[in-house]
Image (cartoon, rainbow, N blue to C red; front, side):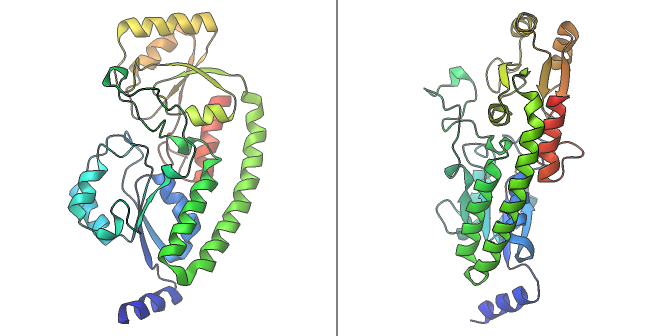
Length: 292
């Protein structure tokens, strides 16, 4: 009873009452929009690194041990680093299936689901492409899921979460209208990408990705595959290579030198590139770099 009263007092004074851990920056940014001053949000993975392979530092354990809510991307994206941390944290509130565990992949429509799963096809995800945050229309789906979960965990502040969600939804619809208008000039562009990171954004705006620099997901490019890409780009008149921030860039620049293509560094998450620190700046940067 004393703990409950303390939480109520802190909330009334403007102190965060729900400790939220998000695996990636975009999820954290959305959680903050919905939770406002009622939540404290910490992001586990740095946007500068490959989201598939985050070093499970001991410092993250203390965060997870105190967390009331863990928000994960899901779709297998955290499979290589998060499970050991969750086990070691020994926090029953945020284990899979617990009230304080939220897997966003259960709420979005994932694309690129493989017909079969085998290591022969590289590092593929059985549930589909997990990089759904690249579709700006998924932001509101995520925000709604977060609002529902926060309302469940912190029911006394349910109306505030609903109000925050409504305000954010209204603002985001306005933002999407402007983004869609700006993207009209980019329709039918042709690109290749290093890894299939950007499929959701490309599909949303009618941009075709012809190939990847990786011959298979997680497999480094060979000379033979690189030559095939050069020939493909010449034949199809593809003049743009989408390069993420964490894979090696030497191959992309070599291909560009042989095809007169431009290499565009595209952020895969909020904060991955300088100037993409907010949700709006993140999608604006993707649009600007692909369209110009």
